[in-house]
Length: 118
Image (cartoon, rainbow, N blue to C red):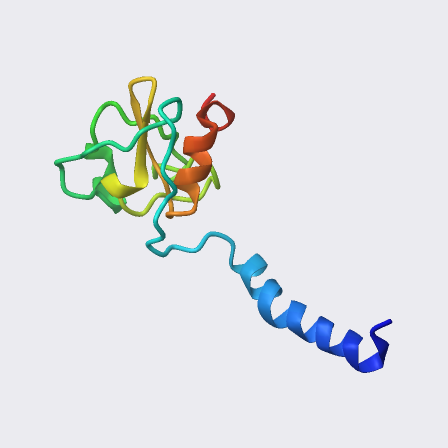
């Protein structure tokens, strides 16, 4: 049994460590994605400069991302706007290039692209 102080300590740890991570959602940091197997989606080299905002309409024709009501590309995993068409945050699947809102979304997509592509 933890006792009164053990429960308080456990609650403090959960609130201090886990709660902020859950509330922040997708971390837009440069995390290295795990190596993918040959059956998963693969990264695509893009020689074009990143496109953001209103200029996103000039993106390559083979982008698979859907657009929201503002005309912004949305991440197929979290459905958040994609702020930059970064080749490091992209994967190719069935001839289309998919861009992601953050580094955490790419490995999820690569593991099971059919889950996120309709």
